[in-house]
Length: 201
Image 1 (cartoon, rainbow, N blue to C red):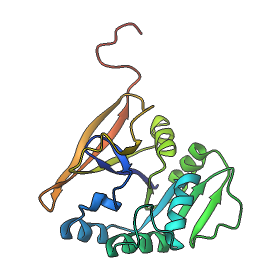
Image 2 (tube, one colour; image 1 turned 60 degrees about the vertical axis):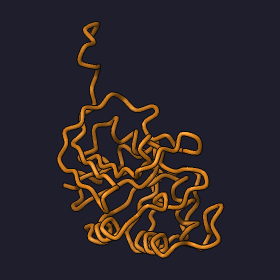
Image 3 (cartoon, helix red, strand yellow; image 1 turned 90 degrees about the vertical axis):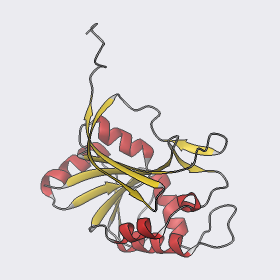
Image 4 (cartoon, helix red, strand yellow; image 1 turned 180 degrees about the vertical axis):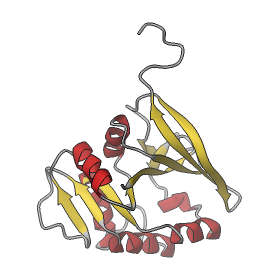
């Protein structure tokens, strides 16, 4: 049976990106980059918007405001290109141009449920906020990991991660600090039917 990880890289205030900020908010360090390179083989799950963005980077499209990719960003995109990817979309057309990508038009929750039951190894979301939210709501997420970078992007932050989420209890299973400033926390999530003090139900 496969294990499903929802994996986010965020600012401290829970944004997935920020206008005018480089990848990793420009704060990745040698410890964090070394840890990224040690990750096990994984099949990545994503929606159409993440696919369009990331496949564009793989094809050489540079993010707004940058002239070139930094070496760390290039390495990250190259690793994603080599990895197997499953893309859930009703709007994309086959064949997908990004190497090692498979298009699935079926309902994402049911498809991932089947992938977990019939597969092995690690499945991981990348970006794809709506997909991650749906998989969490369905109770399919085994591990919920957040790597927080030491910035608050209140003025420029984009893609607020937790909007629309249910209430979720989180049991910590791992934590560590990279380069004296980047904080990783990983939890086993449990979706709550109601908050603890709600006695109306």
